[in-house]
Each structure stands twice: as C-alpha cells, then as structure tokens.
Amino acid sequence: MRPGGAAGWHFTSAPMLDPEPLLVGRRVEDALELLPRVFNLCGAAHRAAASHALGLPGIENVAAMRAETVRDHGMALFQLWPNLLGTMPDRAGLALLARGMPADLVRHVCGGDNLPEFSLADLESWLARPPTPAARLLSEVRDRVDPAWGRAALPALDVGALELGLMEDVPSPRYEATVLERVRTAPVIRALLRNEGASLFVRLLARIVDLLWMAQSGRDTRLHGQAGAGGGYAQAARGILVHQAKVKDGRVVSYRVRTPSAWNLAPGGLFARMLAALPARREAQMLARIAECAVNPCVPLTLHFVREA
Image: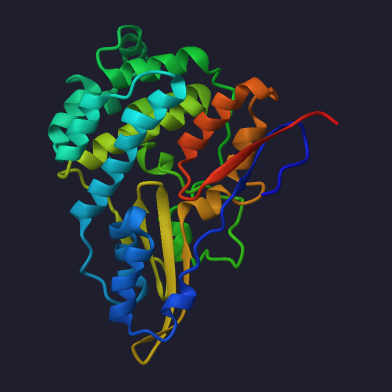
C-alpha cells in the first residue's frame, strides 16, 4: 500500500514471497520438503497446508505447529510489547519459552487463573490488581488505549470459505485472517466483542488466549485440513494460511500460497481500516505499532503519517 489519502497513518509492506518459481517441475515430495524452509517462521504450519495441497496428507506435525504459535505469541508478549510500551522485557517468561515448558508458561501468564474463561467482571478485577507481568501489560494497554481507537472488524476467512475455493488472483480485502476467529468462543473474548467490538485490546488479548490454548496439547483444535480441490489450510501463529497446487504426473505444475498477511494487509483491508480508526496525530505512533502487533504481519511494514493537505 502506498502512503497517501486522508490524514493519518498509512503503511507500505515488503512484497509477499511467491514460492512458485522454486516449485514448478519438482516432485511433490521434494516440494513438500522445500516449502517449510522457504516459510521458516511457521514451517510446520506451511508443511501441514502443503501436504494437503500436494495430496500427501498424514505427515504433518501438530505438536510443532502448536510450538510455533506459542513461540510467536510468547516473543511478542514477553519482549516486543513491553519494548513498545516502554517497560522491561519479561525475562522469566522468555526463559520459560526457551526451555519449552508450556504448563509453567501458562501459570506464568495467568498466575493460576483461567483467563480464557473470565467474565468481564473477572477480567476487570484481574487487571485492577495484576498478578503477573502479562496482566500488568494488559492493564497498561487498557488504561492507555480507547476501545474505539483502531477498532475494525471484517468477516473471518474461515475453513468453510476456503473449502469453496476462495483463492482469487488478488487477495480480497473483504476478509480478515487473524487468530481472533479461532479464540472468539472463549468466554472472555466473546464478552469483550459484545461489549466493545474488535478493539486493539481485544485483539492483543486474543493472541494471549491463543497462546494459552495452543500450549495445552490436550485441547481439541482443528489445525489443518483440505481446502477444496488441490488446496490445504493450516492454523498458523498469525492466522489461517492456504496453499493451492496443481500437480501432474507427480510434479508441481503451479503453486500458490496465501499467508494471513495477504488478506490482512490487502489494500483497503483489515490493517488499513484499523489505521484509519486511529487518532490522526503523529504522536499516536505507539497506537499504530500496537495495531501492527495485533495483526502480526509476517512481512516488514513501514508506517507513514500523512498530514492534512
């Protein structure tokens, strides 16, 4: 997206990676091994989606997919968000993340409370006397960010839509592909969405709820599957991603990948709408960065402030 238009925050993004030139002509087994290296931020999720697209299902690694998501949300919660708000990183949380201790990680985030099951009253009480670094961080966001700032919502790009073959040449700005959809059944998220809509606070909390649920290996979550003919999807750290392949005689003829960012960063799409809902003030850069953290793009962004003409 090019900067310009109405006063306020706008963005440009790096190009999305197109793996097709690397894959055409390769055996499907070789393509499956190459794709997780190309998309190494969420390699296990891409491998799962690719396995369905290439007709090689049954070799995905759900534990690795969960671990990728926990790591991504954890790095944001323990390091990126504190830096953004001018506080110290949560070194204890980072240490638990590095050691791969999901049960201890959940306790560290929640302090023994069941955050996803909170009512609004439970949440406000928890934030009023925050027992953990994560709670203190959320409390600060709650105090500093008006629910109307950055609030935007679009229909979720769900599995049903994908199975209808929703893979246009240009990603549609009509949908969002964030993690909000897969945690909206959590009582605390459901209550907040009724009360204030898809605010920046709600979207950050959704990432924390997703971390907690993904850290619980016994939780039944549909993380991957078929998405129409020649298609596969996976639930990655940033949201739902899709692969679509055409194969002939065991070799790749064409290949398309749509990461969550392809929809969320589409011109006129979710992130553009979130920026348009921010106060049109240069000093609101922190809010624009919070919006970026909430969407969690997989490509670098540059934010631009456009003044009134």
